[in-house]
Length: 130
Image (tube, rainbow, N blue to C red; front, side, top):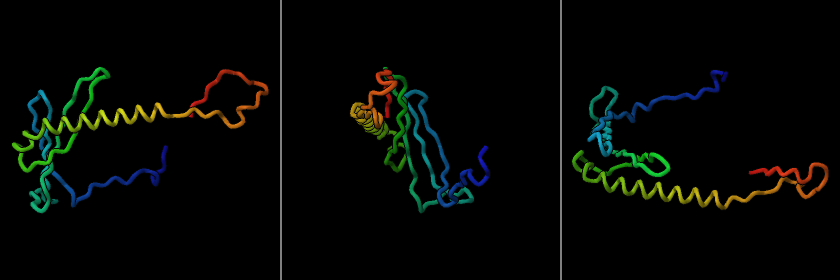
């Protein structure tokens, strides 16, 4: 068991508090509205309201969750920008998957140091991956 001093000190930032509201059509996805608040729960008008969208797409590999920021000032504006946000998030997810595939394909298997020595145990057929 970890000692008390090794545990992370997790604290909320009192200057960065938001009230979260979730709006959904229960079909295509959700929009989250984060309204900045002060410590007493009142609206903090010195900081902007933040909107984000979330949806899931069914792919041959399974469900792909998409979460994205929406630059909007109102819920109505966020609703109008939701479809474009989905498209951008999907394009980013596809690009990330392609990059991961490229990285996996370019990995080089390096033999263990001294592997050229054909002494006892040579030809054991064990492949070692990095």
